[in-house]
Image 1 (tube, rainbow, N blue to C red):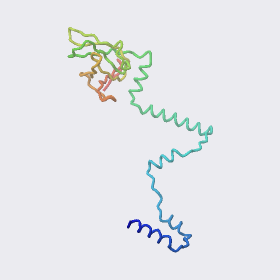
Image 2 (image 1 turned 180 degrees about the horizontal axis):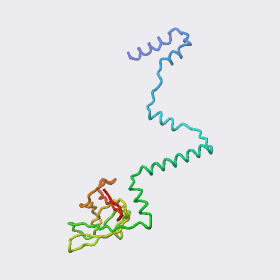
Image 3 (image 1 turned 180 degrees about the vertical axis):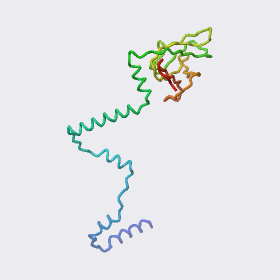
Image 4 (image 1 turned 90 degrees about the vertical axis):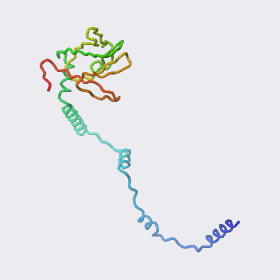
Length: 191
């Protein structure tokens, strides 16, 4: 009961307070004391992206935009490694000479071995290796155009092995290692 009496008395005191006229200058005073909210860079960027924009396309602006895009694409293709473009175009030319490459894998007890790589889109069909009992090696010979290729061996359709004799390797996006093969044309020298 004591808390209830205190509450009732407080309410009665508040009601009996004298009424005063509010100062009209109170609102600007309060607003001056407030600081603007600081937005993070990401928040400002999101607000800018989400806000609607009016885009006016004129023939001149379209031509400039298309020319700029074409120039950027040209610069990007020029900045690719020189050998990459040369090998990609060489692979497309019907007159480019194919170079015979022999893949071999030793010390593997298996029923089937395939060679998979960027040259066959990582598909084992028609790339089964043959076991040479005289040398105890799995062997296959493939003719490839000049270029750079990644490859691995697929053993018994369940185990993937990088070529232990390869000089260069590259990690793939799955965390495994792929062997790297550089195929040069007969008239081309590599350092």
